[in-house]
Length: 352
Ligand code: MN
Image (cartoon, rainbow, N blue to C red; front, side, top):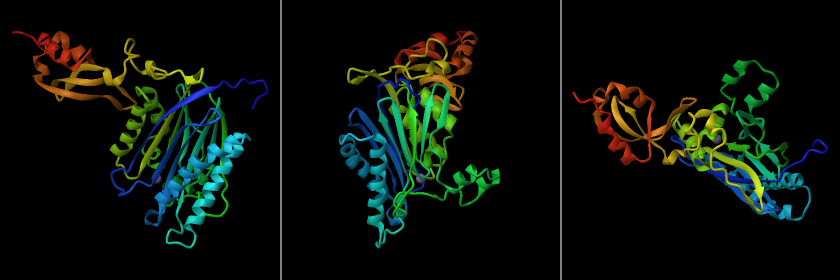
């Protein structure tokens, strides 16, 4: 840390969503969201279990349970937060290794990407190919490196075709695979307004980093961001369990974080005047299949993701709308409620 650099005290709020996907039968991803881990700290983690019938879900559950149980106790002892975090991950490794050894679960293991929000610092402990991203303004940066064959090859500067290798997703490090584990630890100085995103590979293999950032900026709240991210992974095949935890850092205010009402950066995407509109309370009249439709959300697309949904398609064809209104209709005419939208329809029609 740079001497003299002031680290602000921040509070964190988070939401998480994990989904089995559309192909797998069980969800071996696990999440941990602990807003109060002690000493004003919070801890969040994703774990993606490996081993299928051999207990991938047992390994990922052991990882998050060990973090939840042992990290607050270690932090309470008052030592450096980084040491406590790394020691807890080492204990999780030992617990999984011991539970697997000599059983039919031999070979079970898990990824683990955990972030400890410690005042104005984010400490990331990481093993495997789950990821932590930092979304700051318009930039989305991956804080972790993948411990996979593809990740190692990329670090060695291997040619691009290595990415097409069939074994590219094979992990080179995992919790529980061996008696000892090498844990990456990254420290990041955080600012109010920063968003941290933790993902398992089922999520980030389907949704690129820039798009994760765009979704986080556009969503009305943390829950909606998680729902959109997992929904995108499923819409693109849902070939793996997909999990996302979205963590927003806010200024600390007398023990309570100031809740930010408008999502960061939304104004950059939406036309003026709509910036503070919360998506779940916004409606507009638009067009669907050449008919006038009542829509929920806002009439924009962010990097190809529609931020609106159909409430009701009316029987009125666009051809009956007065030409003067067709342009506005195509762009979306904002209304306060679905009922008001319906009431507006007759006034838009051309009367021969
Ligand atoms: Mn996975």
